[in-house]
Length: 357
Ligand code: PMP
Image (cartoon, rainbow, N blue to C red; front, side):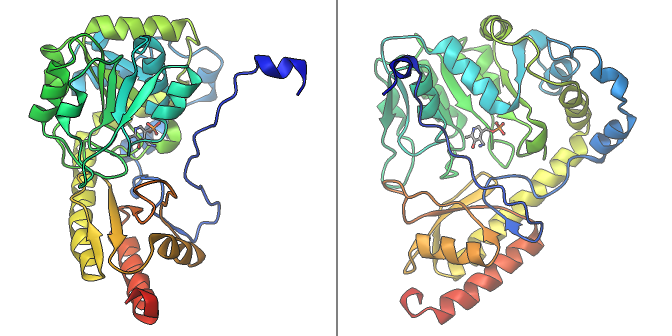
């Protein structure tokens, strides 16, 4: 080992889902929205000029922050925007999780949480979900350095009712509780309203799923102005210009088109509910996901085998060889047409496969 190696911050990085470059695949592996962003985004893109690139973008992420604030009936001081919710969440870990006590999150959850905890040297504890892969709120009623969980959880899709989230928040008034609502727009009820009553609650959302803009990298946190000010202090101490001009302009156009947002999320919810029935008919056990993905296991056919077979056929879904979930697949909800091709392929494969009938 070279002497300087002992001074290096060594991390095991997060592994994102594959982004195959071929255009003929059915891509159901990274929870992107199968529909394009609002036509208002295309219009705003055509109106952009290179002149805007000469200058630095607005460090306070306006007009995007203002537009998000008015969409949710908040003050701009209650909104913090970043480069996808990954950037926002990383800033949150840095800003709010500075205790000697461990932060708490579920054992089966978004696999970036333990990566950030390791990166920033934050002690953490993974709290096991119950047998049905649900969060037990009472497990979080104990001393800790902070709490974070996605709602609905990922990759299970299980949603907690606002009252259950409130129980967790009210038992943790001494620390910051973060509700990661990346998938809340697909039929869940946000706990944003609770931020009025609980100054220790922060809600984080993203443009990557319900607003079809994963490639633009826009995420945001909402809460009381004190928490947002602390986040901004850390951001300005790190990089004042996290968000580029295109993201600010196009993100603003997306938020303005509420009708398109409502129509496309409703369409995904319809496809998801149909998928629950169709996959059950094919022998899958399907959880009651309230997200834009399904977490499934087959009665007889190993998940890994289905995953590999689908991939060879150009249908990408997500599989983790990890404790408790190594026989599960996470399938992003695509268009109706993509889903029909998935069902047809699975039907033929499962029928032909002796071990899997
Ligand atoms: N939270 C959860 C639970 C997620 O699944 C994702 C998507 N990978 C994110 C946050 C981050 O999404 P983005 O950075 O695209 O906003």
